[in-house]
Amino acid sequence: YKFVVDGEWRYAPDQPAMFDDVNNVNNVLEVQEYTPENLDSLSGFDPPPSPPSSYNQPLPVAEDYTKEPPPAPAHLQLTLLNVPPAMDATATLPRPQHVVLNHTYCQRASHQVNALVLGTTHRYRSKYVTTVLYKPRRTTPFEEDHQQRHHTQHQHQHQLLLQQQQ
Image (tube, rainbow, N blue to C red; front, side, top):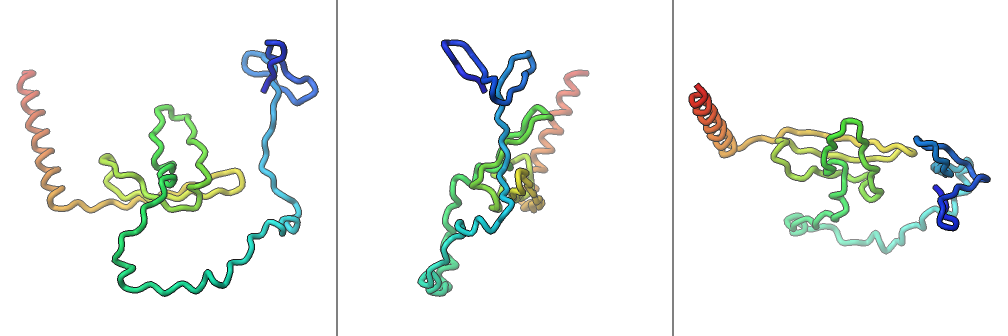
């Protein structure tokens, strides 16, 4: 970081600083995750116990199981499975938002992947671990017929193109 003083970029010489790629001096701020050494000091942050009244809900009845499930919150679509692929092989994935951690999510429908794709992202200290599960989808007889017709049509077009080239 730098400061603008009287219209000029300046750095604070009394603060940690580094040179960048073109020999400019910039102040730096190192951010580290705070890990307390004495976990007993965090006891004041314990959540309060649940009130007993929260446990007296009526049991579900058969009709409850026939209802549509509630829609998933929109922020659960902000997952790594839904990030467009980067063209640069060295590009890093964006840091996952905290609202998607520890949730199981499903990849949006894709014509390129004929599989059900599930994933979950967990945080371990300053690292993020995403586990992805793939399950091939079964094709219905209608889909198989459609794929066969598309394949036959493509072969016919290819043969016509070869004949025109001769």
